[in-house]
Image (cartoon, rainbow, N blue to C red; front, side):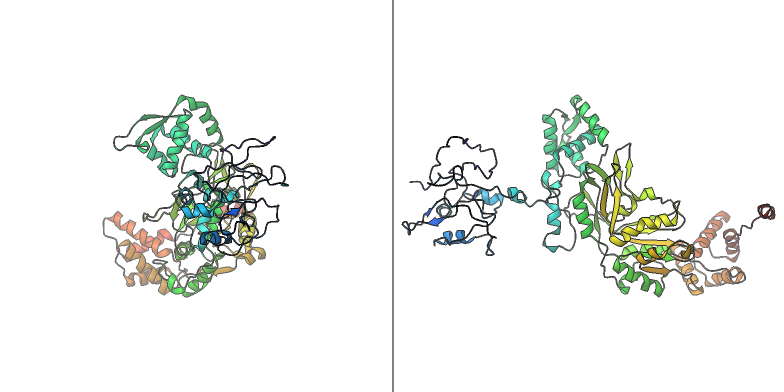
Length: 603
């Protein structure tokens, strides 16, 4: 004797259910008797007063009710299910939004769905199939079902913006750092199948032919995703197998090449985008990663900073000035005479920030690819074998230095009409690191225009970039910005800029004692014996008589000239007075204007 009730045949105006279609509020597919009873939810069970003790709930259609909030009890075992499993009568409860109309009351994983039901579960859960309409019920209103929310389709958590689970997983549980999980299927990448197919076709076009494993390495995607993509292209006759590898079996060792049928399609792809490299990540994932790896809110102490500057001679006032600025992550303004280590101080400051970060090879914005990773600026750390999404590069926090070559156009997305993709601007490549505007005031653009460009990012932590289509884009400005100049600050900056740059620090010249210390350090690094008497001779003969100021770069420059002259004379480099005299006469030169030129300009 079976416990299931057969569905009534469809009435006039109703069509038979198609099992390939998903359930909608007006129809529901029939469930085979052999299927798991947890794939769909029953109508709300109600005990039959006459049949009390039989344990069988009566499936009576209910009038529509206003949904109530879900119960605050255990979501995995609702009241009805716990009561049924324990053998008691199901408690009366109004259906919540996720259960109204017979939708599933419990979200189960795919493994649980495949598990055959036990005998007790088969007795506890009534038939999920549609029932005949009760007398007085509206036509077509029996056993109405609501499709489960899209965010829980297939038992997977997905990002609404990208369709990827990784953006949610990286921030789940309050993790201390961002970690890009390795994608398992195409949906985890946040990319469409068409976009991945185009990447494969372009890789084969530029390389001529490639193995499956080499394609996966080029795109930095899992081998399973690339294999499925290649199979789809083979079915379309765009890709064919040339031969197998010398060792190993499987698709990864096979050699693939393009077929003549792909010519027209490939031409259209290359006219739209010629990017050939690792698969990009979605813009939403990039924004989430930048916020997770922020450079703000550090806890840097004096003792932590002292071993991060290498051989630099750092005064106490410099530690006291840059330490609070790094803890804030806000901008700092260096000023002072040239050659005293402003750039070197910034290079040591970036080493004080904790941890490494993940930088994407490229990001995808409105079907346009933007290259972010730059091998000249980003320094990868040693791979420890921990699995992660290889579309990201694990790097030290970057230090990006721009000088007199900086223009306003370089601070926006740079679109190349030849390759038809973007290069990220300097401040975007410096995200979660440090950006040094060196030699401020010597750029081709006026200082006022350059300062106006930075006012909004420094104030709101948001940078506005523009696509070549005219669309404006908000990008997080998570950068520790430093401005360095050896010009008069009063002639360069105004009060509005100084208000946004909270920390200002003058880098002063070294005194005589520090001058000796710098010379000793440089001699040790160059392999030359240090001689304090020779440095005293240098100071007494060439500095005091001329009131020549010290500079932190002078010991390095003078010592390099002594070494060059020693090799020219065929002797070992040493701090000899004659060699020091020759170095000074070549290094300190005054270019006085000729009298004829002065007179001509005066007339």
